[in-house]
Image (cartoon, rainbow, N blue to C red):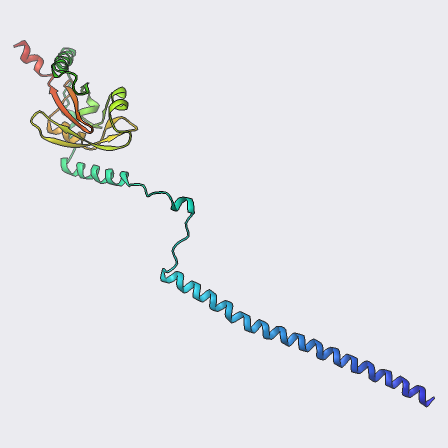
Length: 228
């Protein structure tokens, strides 16, 4: 009986020893994990701080798509033309008083067109030419001059560009040619006002250079001078 009790106690002691060893082993692994976590966190924080400081200092260039980075930068034509139009508006002040509009008669208009056609024949075919009778939209209000479609497609630039108008005394006026709309915008108003163009006048445009016109003006009012 004494031997049986001592055997049972030996088993209990062995079980207690095994439990104690297991607890020690778990504590060992847990402490190792804690040490690893505490050693790795500062390094990650350090890397993040280093990268943030480099980005803030501007040392790291912004990431760009390789396809976009290889493309050449496009010239800012619209910005240049916008500045030009603002300059033109300031140069010529306020718009005309539309109550003083001049309306050409059918006879005056027909006379100016006939005289322009005669001048076109005299100028010959050395340079491309077209005739443009003036309407109210060309010389008052909007001041927009649409050019003949076939002429623009054949002879004028394919993109927006500056076009120079040279009058009969060789004064030059810069205008903005809009390729998509096939017409003159900024600068045309200044030319019209400077030459006192009115409804019924007829202009002969002679393209003497790639972006330069010689402009001849036939006055509708000349109809009355021809009668006299």
